Length: 212
Image: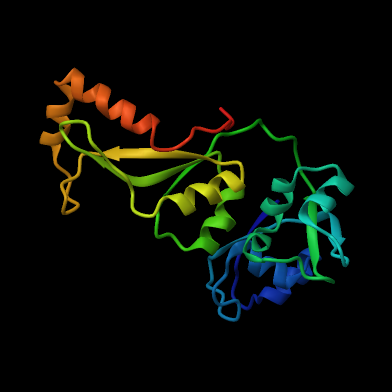
């Protein structure tokens, strides 16, 4: 991987030609909103594909992963746009792996957060890179009543689809959505209310087998 800094006169095509990569790929991988108007000093990540695959009729994400002996999540990480597509487009070229300059230092755990109204395409393109997804926000009362996040079922299901563990983010909120530290204080000094809240949390959603 190379980090290229845009110089005067650079175009996305000239940068792609310099490194022998596809210009459209640079745009996709760097999420460049206006590739015809690069900014001097702008940083662009350049990755060199090592193994690519041209999608054939009948291909699925899982069949391609099986062919190359990789996990489906690796293909989604290398081709985030696939997460937004309902079906694979025949003839489209996807990257199975990139040239790695040095051995990875190890694995990392990544936690992202989202409100339940997050754009579903953005969510699906992000989930392949996450270990956990913190969902905002679940409220609670001083008596231990749990106030669920609105319409959380769908976002939880999508997270589970990608093997990402959804986390419940609790906050002492008033009915009008404002933070109130008194609610938290009253709960913390009331063991009975704490137990009620814990029971409510455990019965709200089934806890699945997620990576730790």
